[in-house]
Amino acid sequence: MKRREFVKKASVAAGAFSIVPSFVMGGRHTPPSDTLYLASIGVGGRGAGVVNEINRTGKVKFVALCDVDANRAAETFKKFKKAKVYTDFRDVYDNHLDEIDGFTVATPDHTHAVISLPFINAKKHAYVEKPLTHNIREARLMAQAASNAGIISQMGNQGASSDGIRKTKEWIDAGVIGKVTKVDCWTNRPVWPQGLRNITEAQPVPKTLDWDLWLGPAADRSYNAAYLPFKWRGFWDFGTGALGDMGCHIMETPFYALELGHPTEAEASCTTVWAGDFVEANYDKVCPPSSIVRLKFESKNHGEVSLNWYDGGVMPDLPDELKDNEILGDWNGGTAFYGTKGILIADTYSANPRLLPGELNAMFRSPEEKITRISEGEDRNRHGSNWVNSVLTETRAASDFSYAGPLTEAVLMGNLAIKAYQYKVLQEGKKEGDWAAFEYPGRRTLKWDGDNMKITNYEKANDWVTRTYREGWKIK
Image (cartoon, rainbow, N blue to C red; front, side, top):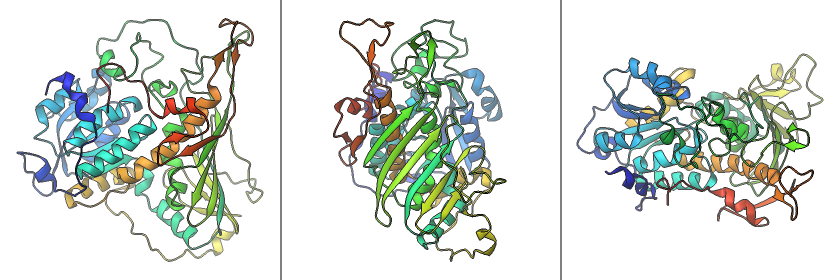
């Protein structure tokens, strides 16, 4: 397939949902029942972790490895010497589509959808890092495409395969803390620079990096080391901020335990950064250093639930029941459920629920175990093992896109509220740089029609439900 035609394949494929064995999907290649043939795109940094976790299953063979940064990917390339190595993911599609059963994507957030959709529409099983996509519309498209293609899919939010998240749901379903009315979620992120001024300085592109491919659908600009590696998370064009980075881990526990769906509304407030005398950082380009996001959901079993998100060192109120020698969650963050009968605390990844006050746990008898646990694999690679085994046995994975898509949408809805808070308009007669030159709409509540993917009370926010795609990278 010619490269210029590649992205056209990213439109959602038509057809009824059905589960098709991998050997049927794989074209001319028929793998043995205990081996999965894969292509991995984005294999440096976190991508190396994904490859290694899946490799530990002993049930996969990597046909092709791809990364735009040869230096970052060097260790993975060296480890899997039999795999073909590429810089452009479209070459993987052109040369190996008939040889692979599935693929993994662990690239920056803004390229997840444009890379994944053509492979999904070719009926290749998918493992995509969290957040599933960069914007809400892409998340909806990914879930629809995976359903239409009948593939086994998994988003890389490891807690979905943990025992703790299942135990948390069993406790809540059993009424241990009564009806849940409020949930507080928090994280120590960002652990990268956020709130920077707009970058204008051009620097030489490293010889090992294909900068144009790294930009993908984002607007063209000069390379600067402030973007890479890892730091891209703080720029709206590439990343999704602290909420996007950790929300699919931390918010997943209440999303799963309370069976939440689309939020009904969202609002946010953020810190202000001054880069000089009366000169505010360019917030339309970068994520804020810290934020508070308030989401509301309607739960079938609990009624209206308020979910509050805190990041950048901002923390929720400490419960009175918390002792001086106790902490909320873990060093990454955590979740606190407030019910009509008590409080439940869950850790970041594995949930590991406990009650407040702490002395209740010693006398507490856990409800009957009703939700099947995922037994395959060690804790550090259980989620990858779950996906591999789900493909080989043609069963649903723990965080398949029918679940991960709506979860990602709920998380990214919080980012719409942050952007609404940040959005500024140059006042008539003022010049940029003047004192109080910009008018800020500021904190506002966004009303969300989830079924139709539309903000009903602030039209500007609908621009952020999707994004502007660079020519040659558009998806339908």
